[in-house]
Image 1: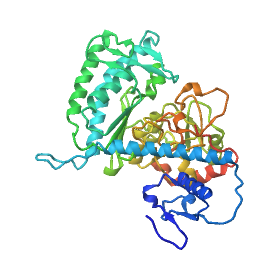
Image 2 (image 1 turned 90 degrees about the vertical axis):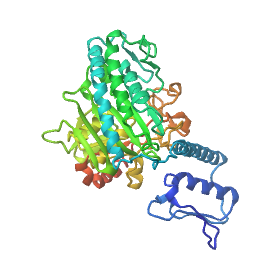
Image 3 (image 1 turned 90 degrees about the horizontal axis):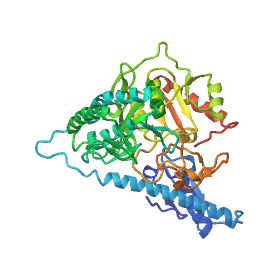
Image 4 (image 1 turned 30 degrees about the horizontal axis):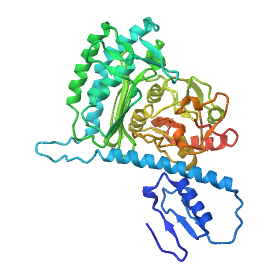
Length: 475
Protein backbone atom coordinates (compact mmCIF):
# COMPACT_ATOMS: atom_id res chain seq x y z
CA UNK A 1 0.00 0.00 0.00
CA UNK A 2 1.27 3.46 -0.81
CA UNK A 3 0.15 6.32 1.39
CA UNK A 4 0.91 10.05 1.09
CA UNK A 5 2.49 11.98 3.93
CA UNK A 6 4.03 15.43 4.16
CA UNK A 7 7.35 13.66 3.91
CA UNK A 8 7.48 11.17 1.02
CA UNK A 9 6.77 7.73 2.47
CA UNK A 10 6.71 4.21 1.10
CA UNK A 11 4.58 1.95 3.32
CA UNK A 12 4.67 -1.81 2.87
CA UNK A 13 1.97 -3.99 4.38
CA UNK A 14 3.64 -6.77 6.39
CA UNK A 15 0.86 -9.27 5.71
CA UNK A 16 2.59 -10.22 2.48
CA UNK A 17 6.16 -9.59 3.61
CA UNK A 18 6.32 -11.20 7.03
CA UNK A 19 9.70 -12.73 6.35
CA UNK A 20 11.31 -9.57 4.89
CA UNK A 21 12.12 -7.22 7.83
CA UNK A 22 15.91 -7.27 7.61
CA UNK A 23 16.22 -7.15 3.86
CA UNK A 24 13.68 -4.33 3.52
CA UNK A 25 15.30 -2.29 6.28
CA UNK A 26 18.69 -2.67 4.61
CA UNK A 27 17.25 -1.87 1.21
CA UNK A 28 15.71 1.42 2.33
CA UNK A 29 18.79 2.41 4.30
CA UNK A 30 21.02 1.79 1.28
CA UNK A 31 18.68 3.61 -1.08
CA UNK A 32 18.61 6.61 1.25
CA UNK A 33 22.38 6.70 1.65
CA UNK A 34 22.85 6.44 -2.08
CA UNK A 35 20.29 9.06 -3.08
CA UNK A 36 20.14 11.42 -0.11
CA UNK A 37 16.36 11.31 -0.43
CA UNK A 38 13.91 11.43 2.42
CA UNK A 39 12.48 7.93 2.60
CA UNK A 40 10.31 6.50 5.33
CA UNK A 41 9.72 2.76 5.66
CA UNK A 42 6.80 1.83 7.89
CA UNK A 43 5.17 -1.54 8.43
CA UNK A 44 2.07 -1.17 10.66
CA UNK A 45 0.41 -4.13 12.31
CA UNK A 46 1.11 -6.63 15.08
CA UNK A 47 3.10 -8.98 12.84
CA UNK A 48 5.74 -6.39 12.01
CA UNK A 49 9.05 -7.02 13.75
CA UNK A 50 10.79 -4.28 15.69
CA UNK A 51 13.13 -3.54 12.81
CA UNK A 52 10.12 -2.79 10.57
CA UNK A 53 8.35 -0.43 12.98
CA UNK A 54 8.98 3.11 11.84
CA UNK A 55 12.34 3.01 10.09
CA UNK A 56 12.63 6.60 8.93
CA UNK A 57 15.54 7.99 6.98
CA UNK A 58 15.23 11.82 6.86
CA UNK A 59 16.99 14.20 4.47
CA UNK A 60 19.76 15.84 6.43
CA UNK A 61 23.40 16.73 6.22
CA UNK A 62 25.49 13.92 7.52
CA UNK A 63 28.88 12.40 7.05
CA UNK A 64 28.83 8.80 5.88
CA UNK A 65 31.18 6.96 8.19
CA UNK A 66 30.95 3.67 6.40
CA UNK A 67 33.72 2.94 3.98
CA UNK A 68 33.07 1.85 0.41
CA UNK A 69 34.09 -1.65 1.47
CA UNK A 70 31.42 -1.80 4.19
CA UNK A 71 28.78 -0.46 1.83
CA UNK A 72 29.76 -3.07 -0.75
CA UNK A 73 29.40 -5.77 1.89
CA UNK A 74 25.88 -4.55 2.69
CA UNK A 75 25.01 -4.59 -1.00
CA UNK A 76 26.31 -8.17 -1.24
CA UNK A 77 24.22 -9.25 1.75
CA UNK A 78 21.18 -7.55 0.24
CA UNK A 79 21.68 -9.31 -3.08
CA UNK A 80 22.07 -12.65 -1.30
CA UNK A 81 18.88 -12.10 0.67
CA UNK A 82 17.00 -11.08 -2.46
CA UNK A 83 18.26 -14.22 -4.18
CA UNK A 84 16.88 -16.30 -1.30
CA UNK A 85 13.53 -14.51 -1.49
CA UNK A 86 13.43 -15.10 -5.23
CA UNK A 87 13.84 -18.80 -4.47
CA UNK A 88 10.90 -18.64 -2.05
CA UNK A 89 8.74 -16.93 -4.66
CA UNK A 90 9.78 -19.48 -7.28
CA UNK A 91 8.96 -22.34 -4.91
CA UNK A 92 5.52 -20.85 -4.30
CA UNK A 93 4.93 -20.34 -8.00
CA UNK A 94 5.99 -23.90 -8.78
CA UNK A 95 3.56 -25.17 -6.15
CA UNK A 96 0.69 -22.88 -7.11
CA UNK A 97 1.06 -23.71 -10.80
CA UNK A 98 -0.10 -27.21 -9.98
CA UNK A 99 -3.04 -26.22 -7.79
CA UNK A 100 -5.56 -24.96 -10.35
CA UNK A 101 -8.14 -27.73 -10.01
CA UNK A 102 -11.88 -28.18 -10.09
CA UNK A 103 -13.58 -30.33 -7.46
CA UNK A 104 -17.17 -29.78 -8.49
CA UNK A 105 -17.31 -32.17 -11.41
CA UNK A 106 -20.13 -34.62 -11.84
CA UNK A 107 -19.92 -37.53 -9.47
CA UNK A 108 -17.07 -36.09 -7.39
CA UNK A 109 -17.59 -36.09 -3.61
CA UNK A 110 -15.31 -33.95 -1.46
CA UNK A 111 -14.30 -35.53 1.83
CA UNK A 112 -14.93 -33.42 4.92
CA UNK A 113 -11.68 -34.77 6.42
CA UNK A 114 -9.18 -35.05 3.56
CA UNK A 115 -6.11 -34.77 5.80
CA UNK A 116 -7.37 -37.44 8.17
CA UNK A 117 -7.99 -39.70 5.17
CA UNK A 118 -4.49 -38.95 3.90
CA UNK A 119 -2.89 -39.78 7.24
CA UNK A 120 -4.82 -43.04 7.58
CA UNK A 121 -3.79 -44.22 4.11
CA UNK A 122 -0.18 -43.19 4.80
CA UNK A 123 -0.16 -45.23 7.97
CA UNK A 124 -1.49 -48.21 6.01
CA UNK A 125 1.33 -47.71 3.50
CA UNK A 126 3.82 -47.83 6.38
CA UNK A 127 2.19 -51.08 7.53
CA UNK A 128 2.55 -52.44 3.99
CA UNK A 129 6.31 -51.86 3.74
CA UNK A 130 7.06 -52.89 7.35
CA UNK A 131 7.59 -56.64 6.67
CA UNK A 132 10.01 -55.83 3.85
CA UNK A 133 11.87 -53.37 6.05
CA UNK A 134 12.09 -55.93 8.86
CA UNK A 135 13.60 -58.45 6.43
CA UNK A 136 16.28 -55.98 5.35
CA UNK A 137 16.98 -55.07 8.96
CA UNK A 138 17.48 -58.69 9.99
CA UNK A 139 19.88 -59.22 7.10
CA UNK A 140 21.91 -56.09 7.87
CA UNK A 141 21.99 -56.88 11.57
CA UNK A 142 23.45 -60.30 10.75
CA UNK A 143 26.11 -59.07 8.36
CA UNK A 144 26.49 -55.33 7.85
CA UNK A 145 29.48 -55.83 5.59
CA UNK A 146 27.96 -58.29 3.15
CA UNK A 147 27.37 -55.81 0.36
CA UNK A 148 23.95 -54.49 1.34
CA UNK A 149 25.15 -51.26 2.89
CA UNK A 150 27.50 -48.48 1.84
CA UNK A 151 28.75 -45.19 3.22
CA UNK A 152 27.08 -42.07 1.84
CA UNK A 153 29.13 -38.96 1.14
CA UNK A 154 27.62 -37.16 4.17
CA UNK A 155 28.94 -39.87 6.52
CA UNK A 156 25.60 -41.59 7.22
CA UNK A 157 24.87 -45.18 6.36
CA UNK A 158 22.78 -45.81 3.33
CA UNK A 159 21.05 -49.14 2.87
CA UNK A 160 19.13 -50.70 0.08
CA UNK A 161 16.07 -50.35 2.28
CA UNK A 162 16.36 -46.53 2.19
CA UNK A 163 16.13 -46.46 -1.58
CA UNK A 164 13.41 -49.09 -1.91
CA UNK A 165 11.14 -47.61 0.78
CA UNK A 166 11.34 -44.12 -0.72
CA UNK A 167 10.74 -45.51 -4.20
CA UNK A 168 7.62 -47.33 -3.02
CA UNK A 169 6.23 -44.18 -1.43
CA UNK A 170 7.08 -41.65 -4.15
CA UNK A 171 6.78 -43.72 -7.33
CA UNK A 172 3.89 -45.93 -6.22
CA UNK A 173 1.85 -44.69 -3.24
CA UNK A 174 2.07 -40.94 -3.94
CA UNK A 175 2.44 -41.16 -7.74
CA UNK A 176 0.09 -39.82 -10.40
CA UNK A 177 0.40 -36.03 -10.03
CA UNK A 178 -1.87 -36.03 -6.99
CA UNK A 179 0.44 -33.61 -5.14
CA UNK A 180 2.08 -30.31 -6.05
CA UNK A 181 5.63 -31.39 -5.20
CA UNK A 182 7.35 -34.36 -3.56
CA UNK A 183 10.76 -34.17 -1.88
CA UNK A 184 12.63 -37.24 -0.65
CA UNK A 185 15.90 -37.59 1.24
CA UNK A 186 17.21 -40.11 -1.28
CA UNK A 187 16.18 -38.26 -4.45
CA UNK A 188 19.58 -38.89 -6.05
CA UNK A 189 19.26 -42.67 -5.83
CA UNK A 190 18.46 -44.88 -8.81
CA UNK A 191 16.03 -47.69 -7.99
CA UNK A 192 14.84 -50.55 -10.20
CA UNK A 193 12.30 -52.99 -8.74
CA UNK A 194 10.50 -53.76 -12.00
CA UNK A 195 12.97 -55.93 -13.90
CA UNK A 196 15.58 -58.29 -12.54
CA UNK A 197 18.10 -57.86 -11.20
CA UNK A 198 16.51 -55.41 -8.75
CA UNK A 199 18.97 -52.65 -7.94
CA UNK A 200 19.57 -49.54 -5.84
CA UNK A 201 22.28 -47.49 -7.51
CA UNK A 202 25.08 -49.97 -8.18
CA UNK A 203 23.94 -52.42 -5.50
CA UNK A 204 22.18 -55.59 -6.66
CA UNK A 205 19.33 -56.58 -4.32
CA UNK A 206 19.73 -60.24 -3.30
CA UNK A 207 17.08 -62.57 -4.74
CA UNK A 208 15.90 -63.51 -1.26
CA UNK A 209 14.25 -60.07 -0.99
CA UNK A 210 12.44 -60.05 -4.34
CA UNK A 211 9.25 -61.71 -3.08
CA UNK A 212 8.83 -59.41 -0.08
CA UNK A 213 9.51 -56.33 -2.24
CA UNK A 214 6.90 -57.46 -4.76
CA UNK A 215 4.35 -58.04 -1.99
CA UNK A 216 4.96 -54.55 -0.58
CA UNK A 217 4.72 -52.97 -4.03
CA UNK A 218 1.35 -54.59 -4.75
CA UNK A 219 -0.13 -53.39 -1.44
CA UNK A 220 1.25 -49.87 -1.83
CA UNK A 221 -0.07 -49.61 -5.40
CA UNK A 222 -3.53 -50.57 -4.17
CA UNK A 223 -3.40 -47.96 -1.41
CA UNK A 224 -2.34 -45.33 -3.94
CA UNK A 225 -5.52 -45.87 -5.94
CA UNK A 226 -7.53 -44.88 -2.85
CA UNK A 227 -5.89 -41.44 -2.60
CA UNK A 228 -8.16 -38.60 -3.72
CA UNK A 229 -6.85 -37.48 -7.11
CA UNK A 230 -7.89 -33.84 -6.64
CA UNK A 231 -7.92 -33.00 -2.93
CA UNK A 232 -4.16 -32.64 -2.43
CA UNK A 233 -3.03 -30.64 -5.47
CA UNK A 234 -1.67 -27.79 -3.32
CA UNK A 235 0.29 -30.04 -0.94
CA UNK A 236 4.06 -30.56 -0.94
CA UNK A 237 5.21 -33.89 0.53
CA UNK A 238 8.48 -34.49 2.38
CA UNK A 239 9.53 -38.13 2.78
CA UNK A 240 12.29 -39.55 4.97
CA UNK A 241 12.12 -43.27 4.21
CA UNK A 242 14.34 -44.28 7.12
CA UNK A 243 15.15 -41.58 9.65
CA UNK A 244 18.03 -43.00 11.61
CA UNK A 245 19.82 -44.90 8.86
CA UNK A 246 22.94 -45.18 11.02
CA UNK A 247 20.85 -46.85 13.72
CA UNK A 248 19.23 -49.07 11.09
CA UNK A 249 22.64 -50.17 9.84
CA UNK A 250 24.04 -50.80 13.33
CA UNK A 251 21.25 -52.96 14.78
CA UNK A 252 19.55 -50.20 16.79
CA UNK A 253 16.24 -50.42 14.98
CA UNK A 254 14.13 -49.28 17.94
CA UNK A 255 15.21 -45.70 17.14
CA UNK A 256 14.31 -45.82 13.44
CA UNK A 257 11.28 -43.99 12.07
CA UNK A 258 9.61 -43.49 8.71
CA UNK A 259 8.49 -39.86 8.27
CA UNK A 260 5.93 -38.60 5.77
CA UNK A 261 4.93 -34.94 6.11
CA UNK A 262 2.31 -32.96 4.19
CA UNK A 263 2.68 -29.18 3.81
CA UNK A 264 0.36 -26.46 2.54
CA UNK A 265 0.94 -24.14 -0.42
CA UNK A 266 3.29 -21.86 1.56
CA UNK A 267 5.26 -24.71 3.11
CA UNK A 268 3.68 -25.00 6.56
CA UNK A 269 3.30 -28.58 7.86
CA UNK A 270 -0.39 -29.49 8.13
CA UNK A 271 -0.45 -33.29 8.45
CA UNK A 272 1.97 -36.12 8.94
CA UNK A 273 2.80 -39.63 10.06
CA UNK A 274 5.73 -40.82 12.19
CA UNK A 275 6.13 -44.59 12.27
CA UNK A 276 8.62 -46.83 14.11
CA UNK A 277 8.70 -50.01 11.98
CA UNK A 278 11.12 -52.06 14.07
CA UNK A 279 9.60 -51.90 17.54
CA UNK A 280 7.29 -54.64 18.79
CA UNK A 281 4.54 -53.69 18.38
CA UNK A 282 5.15 -50.93 15.84
CA UNK A 283 4.67 -47.52 17.45
CA UNK A 284 3.40 -44.54 15.50
CA UNK A 285 1.63 -41.19 15.63
CA UNK A 286 -0.38 -39.26 13.05
CA UNK A 287 -2.09 -35.91 13.14
CA UNK A 288 -3.67 -32.97 11.32
CA UNK A 289 -4.30 -29.96 13.56
CA UNK A 290 -6.83 -28.17 11.34
CA UNK A 291 -9.10 -31.23 11.41
CA UNK A 292 -8.47 -31.89 15.12
CA UNK A 293 -7.27 -35.35 14.16
CA UNK A 294 -4.77 -37.42 16.14
CA UNK A 295 -4.14 -41.16 16.27
CA UNK A 296 -1.31 -43.16 17.77
CA UNK A 297 0.15 -46.27 19.34
CA UNK A 298 2.85 -45.01 21.67
CA UNK A 299 5.30 -46.40 24.21
CA UNK A 300 4.40 -44.02 27.03
CA UNK A 301 6.89 -43.24 29.79
CA UNK A 302 5.87 -44.30 33.27
CA UNK A 303 6.46 -41.98 34.99
CA UNK A 304 6.83 -39.17 32.44
CA UNK A 305 9.90 -36.91 32.42
CA UNK A 306 8.64 -33.31 31.95
CA UNK A 307 12.00 -31.97 33.16
CA UNK A 308 13.91 -33.96 30.58
CA UNK A 309 15.79 -32.14 27.81
CA UNK A 310 16.38 -34.40 24.81
CA UNK A 311 19.96 -34.02 23.62
CA UNK A 312 21.78 -35.45 20.64
CA UNK A 313 24.43 -38.13 20.78
CA UNK A 314 26.99 -35.42 19.97
CA UNK A 315 28.38 -32.88 22.44
CA UNK A 316 25.86 -30.18 23.39
CA UNK A 317 26.71 -26.57 22.64
CA UNK A 318 27.57 -24.15 25.47
CA UNK A 319 24.23 -22.42 24.85
CA UNK A 320 22.24 -25.63 25.39
CA UNK A 321 24.44 -26.66 28.32
CA UNK A 322 23.74 -23.35 30.08
CA UNK A 323 20.04 -23.50 29.18
CA UNK A 324 19.65 -26.95 30.76
CA UNK A 325 21.27 -25.66 33.94
CA UNK A 326 19.26 -22.43 33.99
CA UNK A 327 15.96 -24.32 33.56
CA UNK A 328 16.88 -27.01 36.09
CA UNK A 329 16.39 -29.77 33.53
CA UNK A 330 17.85 -33.25 33.16
CA UNK A 331 19.78 -34.41 30.10
CA UNK A 332 18.04 -37.25 28.25
CA UNK A 333 20.30 -38.87 25.59
CA UNK A 334 18.47 -39.51 22.32
CA UNK A 335 19.15 -40.31 18.67
CA UNK A 336 17.37 -39.65 15.35
CA UNK A 337 15.09 -36.64 14.80
CA UNK A 338 11.85 -38.56 14.25
CA UNK A 339 12.50 -40.70 17.31
CA UNK A 340 13.02 -37.57 19.44
CA UNK A 341 9.65 -36.17 18.34
CA UNK A 342 8.05 -39.51 19.25
CA UNK A 343 9.80 -39.36 22.65
CA UNK A 344 8.20 -35.97 23.32
CA UNK A 345 4.74 -37.44 22.62
CA UNK A 346 5.56 -40.38 24.88
CA UNK A 347 6.53 -38.17 27.82
CA UNK A 348 10.17 -39.32 27.72
CA UNK A 349 11.25 -35.68 27.70
CA UNK A 350 9.61 -32.28 27.93
CA UNK A 351 11.69 -30.35 25.41
CA UNK A 352 13.98 -30.79 22.42
CA UNK A 353 15.97 -27.60 21.78
CA UNK A 354 19.09 -27.18 19.68
CA UNK A 355 21.07 -24.42 18.06
CA UNK A 356 23.57 -26.55 16.16
CA UNK A 357 22.24 -28.26 13.06
CA UNK A 358 22.55 -31.60 11.34
CA UNK A 359 18.82 -31.71 10.61
CA UNK A 360 17.09 -31.46 7.26
CA UNK A 361 13.51 -30.56 6.37
CA UNK A 362 12.46 -34.17 5.83
CA UNK A 363 13.34 -34.53 9.53
CA UNK A 364 11.00 -31.70 10.56
CA UNK A 365 7.98 -31.82 8.22
CA UNK A 366 6.04 -34.76 9.70
CA UNK A 367 7.23 -34.16 13.31
CA UNK A 368 6.10 -30.52 13.18
CA UNK A 369 2.64 -31.42 11.89
CA UNK A 370 2.15 -34.25 14.37
CA UNK A 371 3.44 -32.36 17.42
CA UNK A 372 1.18 -29.41 16.62
CA UNK A 373 -1.81 -31.72 16.20
CA UNK A 374 -1.10 -33.17 19.64
CA UNK A 375 -0.90 -29.69 21.19
CA UNK A 376 2.86 -29.12 21.15
CA UNK A 377 5.14 -27.21 18.82
CA UNK A 378 8.25 -27.54 16.65
CA UNK A 379 9.57 -24.19 15.45
CA UNK A 380 12.67 -22.34 14.30
CA UNK A 381 14.77 -21.09 17.21
CA UNK A 382 15.80 -17.75 15.63
CA UNK A 383 12.33 -16.12 15.38
CA UNK A 384 11.41 -17.59 18.77
CA UNK A 385 14.40 -15.85 20.36
CA UNK A 386 14.17 -12.59 18.44
CA UNK A 387 10.43 -12.08 18.08
CA UNK A 388 8.77 -14.53 20.48
CA UNK A 389 7.21 -16.24 17.43
CA UNK A 390 6.67 -19.96 16.87
CA UNK A 391 7.40 -20.21 13.15
CA UNK A 392 7.95 -23.58 11.44
CA UNK A 393 10.52 -24.23 8.74
CA UNK A 394 9.41 -23.67 5.14
CA UNK A 395 8.79 -27.05 3.49
CA UNK A 396 8.68 -26.44 -0.26
CA UNK A 397 10.67 -27.89 -3.12
CA UNK A 398 13.43 -25.37 -3.83
CA UNK A 399 16.87 -24.89 -5.32
CA UNK A 400 18.00 -22.57 -2.51
CA UNK A 401 17.52 -22.70 1.24
CA UNK A 402 14.29 -20.83 2.03
CA UNK A 403 15.11 -20.25 5.71
CA UNK A 404 18.70 -19.03 5.41
CA UNK A 405 19.64 -15.66 6.96
CA UNK A 406 22.97 -14.19 5.79
CA UNK A 407 25.65 -13.80 8.45
CA UNK A 408 24.03 -16.10 11.02
CA UNK A 409 25.05 -19.62 9.99
CA UNK A 410 28.40 -21.35 10.42
CA UNK A 411 29.45 -23.69 7.63
CA UNK A 412 29.68 -27.37 8.60
CA UNK A 413 30.19 -30.64 6.80
CA UNK A 414 26.47 -31.42 7.13
CA UNK A 415 25.11 -28.10 5.77
CA UNK A 416 27.71 -27.36 3.07
CA UNK A 417 26.36 -27.79 -0.45
CA UNK A 418 29.88 -28.45 -1.69
CA UNK A 419 31.76 -30.38 0.97
CA UNK A 420 35.08 -29.18 -0.40
CA UNK A 421 34.20 -25.68 0.79
CA UNK A 422 34.26 -26.88 4.41
CA UNK A 423 37.66 -26.82 6.12
CA UNK A 424 37.84 -28.66 9.42
CA UNK A 425 39.01 -26.48 12.27
CA UNK A 426 38.07 -23.21 10.57
CA UNK A 427 35.05 -21.09 11.51
CA UNK A 428 33.33 -19.68 8.44
CA UNK A 429 30.12 -17.62 8.70
CA UNK A 430 28.04 -17.95 5.54
CA UNK A 431 26.71 -14.88 3.70
CA UNK A 432 25.82 -16.55 0.41
CA UNK A 433 22.73 -18.77 0.31
CA UNK A 434 24.24 -20.75 -2.58
CA UNK A 435 26.83 -22.23 -0.18
CA UNK A 436 24.19 -23.93 2.01
CA UNK A 437 22.23 -27.09 1.21
CA UNK A 438 18.70 -26.24 0.14
CA UNK A 439 17.01 -28.40 2.77
CA UNK A 440 19.31 -27.93 5.78
CA UNK A 441 17.63 -26.61 8.94
CA UNK A 442 19.91 -23.67 9.77
CA UNK A 443 17.87 -21.71 12.33
CA UNK A 444 17.98 -24.17 15.21
CA UNK A 445 14.97 -25.88 16.73
CA UNK A 446 12.52 -25.37 19.58
CA UNK A 447 10.20 -28.29 20.23
CA UNK A 448 8.07 -29.09 23.28
CA UNK A 449 5.14 -31.35 24.02
CA UNK A 450 1.65 -30.23 25.00
CA UNK A 451 2.42 -30.40 28.71
CA UNK A 452 5.32 -27.95 28.32
CA UNK A 453 3.46 -25.34 26.24
CA UNK A 454 2.70 -23.46 29.45
CA UNK A 455 6.46 -23.09 30.00
CA UNK A 456 7.23 -21.51 26.62
CA UNK A 457 7.65 -18.03 28.15
CA UNK A 458 9.97 -19.40 30.83
CA UNK A 459 12.09 -21.16 28.22
CA UNK A 460 12.50 -17.96 26.21
CA UNK A 461 13.41 -15.89 29.26
CA UNK A 462 16.07 -18.45 30.18
CA UNK A 463 17.43 -18.43 26.60
CA UNK A 464 17.68 -14.64 26.52
CA UNK A 465 19.60 -14.77 29.78
CA UNK A 466 22.12 -17.47 28.85
CA UNK A 467 22.75 -16.11 25.32
CA UNK A 468 24.40 -13.04 26.88
CA UNK A 469 27.22 -15.32 28.01
CA UNK A 470 27.09 -18.16 25.49
CA UNK A 471 25.13 -17.14 22.36
CA UNK A 472 23.68 -19.91 20.20
CA UNK A 473 25.76 -21.31 17.36
CA UNK A 474 23.55 -21.84 14.33
CA UNK A 475 24.75 -24.46 11.86
